[in-house]
Image (tube, rainbow, N blue to C red; front, top):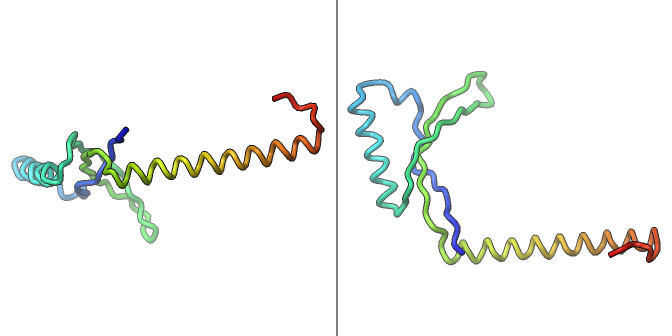
Length: 110
């Protein structure tokens, strides 16, 4: 089953949101159109605070995100990764089981 992927459309510094409300609305509408042209749905605005390593200040940003369904390639890669992780977990569990079996003998209950 395909999953939805969250995609960043735009990052806007909060300081850019100073001015007339009509210009702010227009800016958001342009960003929304970019997202829609890219095939995104469920376009939303979130806020975030960034700290800069060389500066003691924090900066507020608005992030505009949209969602899309993953591609065939992305889905295959995700499934392959999950399968590899499961196989690695099985190997670790088997190794741990064998170690404990040697330590405590066959008295372990399955």
